[in-house]
Length: 194
Image (cartoon, rainbow, N blue to C red):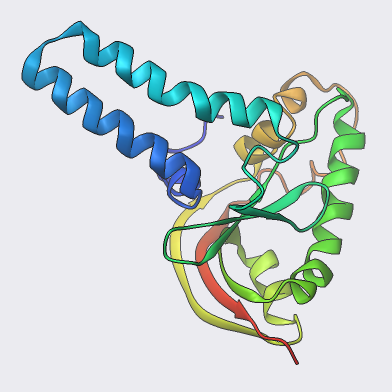
């Protein structure tokens, strides 16, 4: 199953780096439509190259002054407004779906402790289970939890595992809840120091 437009849209807007890429591309396309000059397409590609290079070369895909490493897979990226967006960097180097899912689950269990050590204002697009875990973090104050879309976890798991879930013939540890549709929220919260 493909990801819905809404889930892709919120995945992009919750990541400040991807927002910068999208704005640049939209402005470039508007200029191209206005002028019909092929040079604009070349400039758009030049604009995107640094983002792609950063994604592939830096350990977390983002410059250190814009991001903080929370766990080996979870990062927070600073937006221009000063709020950090939490993103999951897909694990590389293994094609074993079960190992990836165990790794993702272990990292998500470590995330609340990591957030306590890195106080600040955060934003995340997540489902109700994770929202309840955020509420239990000591010093966490949920500012808003706006429902944004309903989806099952099939497309999300495929994206997290790089498509390994589609090819996996073995019993998946996440298969039980994969088809259950869940409400996803745009959560804004603050972690205070105690």
